[in-house]
Length: 338
Image (cartoon, rainbow, N blue to C red; front, top):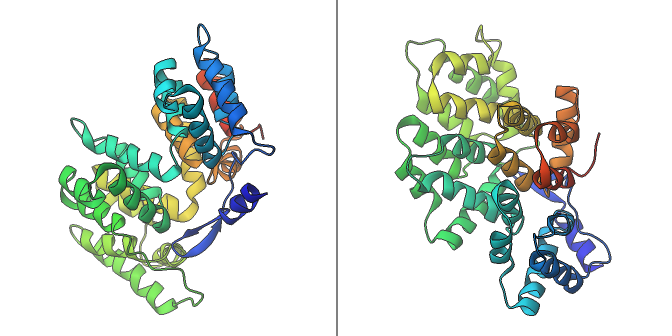
């Protein structure tokens, strides 16, 4: 029962201060026996040719807290570290997915951020997705975990690896200064911000990017939704069209990601999944990242948005565009067909 009550207490996370309900596809399993799971995993890993199916069945159907207990028991019986054993037994996309599941959501996000910054050249696409789609509370947790894991400050790493207005926007977001949603709708402020966005962009020659950054990184999400609506009464273009006209490259992608996430975060992830799977040789890294990082957060809602937007279920799309054990693991995380 303790696990159930712990799970229920985790069921809300806040989008900048307000409790946002969780819609996970992976929840704690009942009648959980970590020692039994650990023993089954040991047999599956040691067996000739590796029994991937058992590994998938166990790790994709347990919550992170339960996986942690399994890892503890595994080490006790086999004297080996479970992530290390999985790394040795598996390969490719399945290995990446299983190792991702051995981390908490914020540890996983932090390690993905680190990987996008650390190598030769920056993986801007990953950086944009992770920084622009996470809410205040998630970002605060990621920063804390990033420092614990890598003994470095996330904002310093981001600043050291990006430049110009793109760097300024990411830094402003990582500093998590976004207002909490208020019960009072400030129509005057909504109007001022909408006008300022227009005057800083479409109305003038050149763009006053600093004004855009401060509004987009500091105002609460419900406030910004109303600002974008109001913006249409000043500008001949909506906010997304204006962004496309005013800025280019990584800055354009970042602002567009922010706007998509402010308007419907789960739809943003659904569209990312669709794009990643449609592209030639499915972009497995993107698919893995979204499925692993959102399965205990809002993947159920992403599934709903996916079906609504693309007229086909996420489950069917995964079945069509991926294969083998990797496909089985993704379908299990998906948690069912719609």
